[in-house]
Image 1 (cartoon, helix red, strand yellow):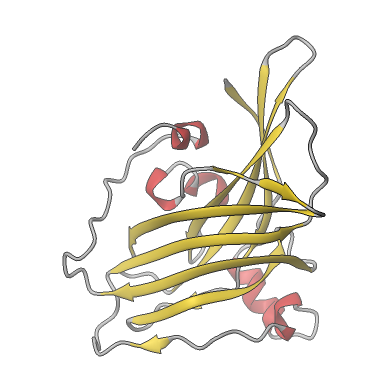
Image 2 (cartoon, one colour):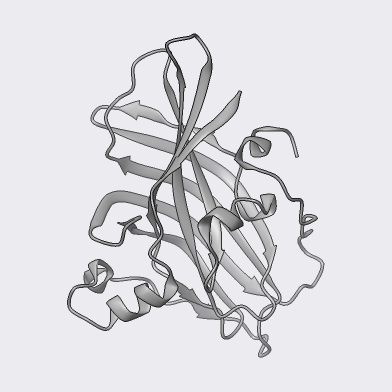
Length: 210
């Protein structure tokens, strides 16, 4: 199995901030829950994301033997998508999406734990991974950027429970029907969670047991 292609783009935090100040921002109309500030007054050192489910992923149903997996990646500040994929701990393990009625649903049920010292903000970037067979019977794995969440500031220690809102398309042009449910905690590194080693690899390595 080999990674054959990556498609999609990420417009970057600078462009998102510039867009947010205009009426053209797709995220401008999205009402989001305000985070709860924790008693810890210092800047956070550790970010814990508990991924729940993704619903209303409006992509065409694939036919057997083709399948689709979804993956969530934490992006900080001005991270580049392609480079961030190389840091395995910043992404969850790809999960198979199921087609129900008229759209895909994905039950992540995973946790991403990463250090966030010196980071100003983050968002979650969602990719879809298509597994298919080519004309020679070889397996192809194609990755495409799907969308991203509204950035969350990391100026202080915060918590967000049962956070759920629509995503913006990967190119920043429109809101998606997809709803991602997750929980956020940015806090001091008190030992309550183990931060994984910063292993370098590729998307295919995420399929392997950690």
